[in-house]
Amino acid sequence: MQILSEQTCISCSSRSKSVTDEIITELKPQIPEWGIIIQDGERRLQRTYLFSNFQKALAFTQLVGEAAEIEGHHPSLLTEWGKVTATWWTHAIKGLHRNDFIMAAKSDHIYTKYI
Ligand SMILES: C[C@H](O)[C@H](O)[C@H]1CNC2=NC(N)=NC(=O)C2=N1
Image (cartoon, rainbow, N blue to C red; front, side, top):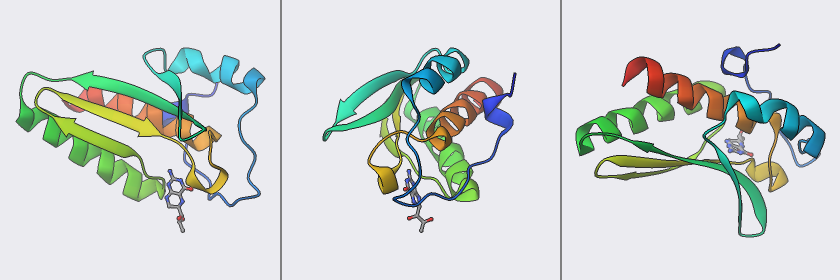
């Protein structure tokens, strides 16, 4: 099995392919806490992470932001007291690409390892 959190994103354009339902079924077990939501008519991955205070939520936000800059793939991050809601999707295709699953897995890795 290829470990998603160890993979890197590829650059996307409007011609990039969305993940198929079959691929989603294959990848989803590696990011079990993530839901697939529909927002603005697009499929997106979303998870809320919990923390014991605002400072830890902010530190997590910063680390996920740094990972996003490294990969050139960027999330929506809503930082609140005790929680961060992360949403990943691919703007270029208005939906889900394999990159989003990779970044969701990297976000989970940051949460378990560094916070
Ligand atoms: C030019 C640059 O690579 C693109 O605009 C990138 C930046 N970050 C991105 N992030 C996300 N989530 N989706 C994109 O399509 C995207 N495109």
